Image 1 (cartoon, rainbow, N blue to C red):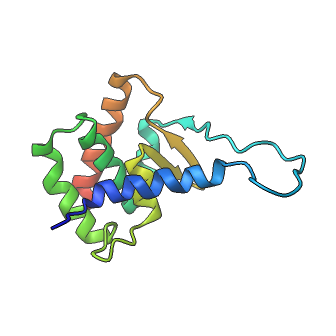
Image 2: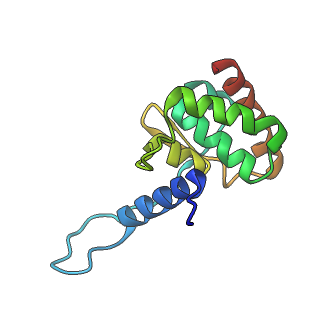
Image 3: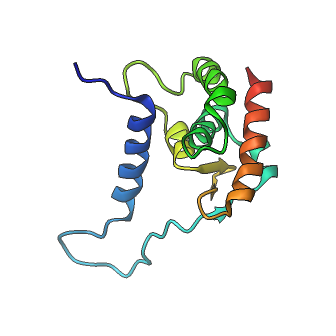
Length: 138
């Protein structure tokens, strides 16, 4: 029996989605367009209040996966917020905001910010804020 992890599927969707947007054209004439660069601004604690609940669920997943939030503290909250938002539907189609969050990225007002380039201590502060907001949202 093959088992699929919703978290692994979401990360795969996020990674392949971003990779497809950053690949150069493989055939045809080239145009003078600047390359797409995924150089997102660093995330901030204040940004946690502006992200969607599905993105929040994804960021919480990221925080648990990189051990900045313990499984004991994060798993039950993760399950509850996923159920509330439908961020990980049973048909495995997924939610883009959730997938972006699992890659450690926020979407606030159309602007994407990332946790991945921050020092561990700063990531920890943001993950604490994410956990607090997630708990208050369920």
